[in-house]
Length: 473
Image (tube, rainbow, N blue to C red; front, top):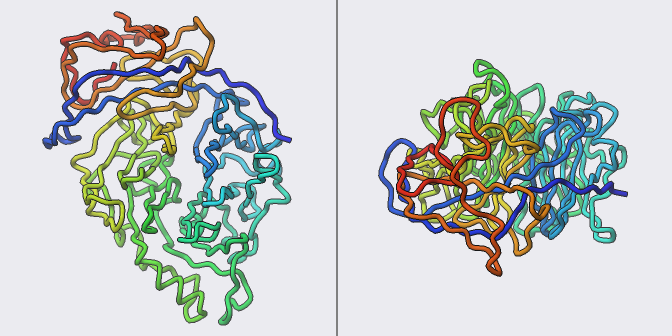
């Protein structure tokens, strides 16, 4: 049975912000005038110790949300389920952790179109994956570390390496079949595994691996292990090397691998006419395309929206990151179909949220952006000190702040909504609009959480004051 507990939510309400915003580019290139206002609400989630944090958030086909806690339950990781419409979380690892035998600090979580999720097995020494289908009879994922171990024999146990991260490319049938991309812990490789709709892996029909589960290496010998990675509707892969290693140990950049680089290669190995251990791509980072050519900023995570825009997590930390924010890189090709690395104009990228984002952002079907923020000490908007009891993740939305018709939280308790303006703007007024004429939120003249030193604009913002890009209130 899943263990259920109630989190401490900050106050959330239907709010609106009326202001015209002129967007400016990251590097000062002019863009068309648009309205863009973003708002956020901090969601604290209780963990077993101060170091645990959310690294991956996935929305299931049924609307439920899964959150990966990298070191919950004694350090062995935990998975939390928030059912659609619920304000509570349940620990689907039943209080035991992902694998009490050794797995810990697991960052990876992927899901197919049927709601089956995949989790890598980092540090345990057993070199395998976990595959857990959704159980419609009880409305959850009945996780078992021993019962859900999956494909430990692929390439003799992933060359003897732990599995680092995962991403799933659904087939056109959307029936659970597709390709699972797996990054390895020590070899700095990416492997691809074809998966059938019943969760099994087809066998090589001939050749030296005849009778063994199919696999194919995409690339080998990168400078560092692949951590964040995601796929678009075309099957193109985007990835970032480990953002938590020293800069000298990784190659900074957001890499792009088109589906055409691996399609025929996988077909050849599946037919037994080529070796699956020979990577589809010859060479390493210099053989790959990037969507951020020339950029030196280190990013912590990556996500895509339905229009094909890219969202990059950024944090000012000790690993080479210099900004706190969520960076949107626009897809300016006009469609998510058929994008290439040159479809993304990095010079027109925008920071759209003043949140230090520690890991992969996620975008749910409502358009809300879930931003993992790390431990409770990692999050505060620019110009503020740490906010008591917060951390772990922030819900963010572009354009408005509608977070449901019913406010969640303790009536009368202090709740804070932060706003960020993109570009230069002089707001004439700021108005909160709530259902039924309620007034849970009101603009205040002073920052309730002032910085330890220095000065900051009034919160939410003082009318008539200029706010330029990277200024938040």
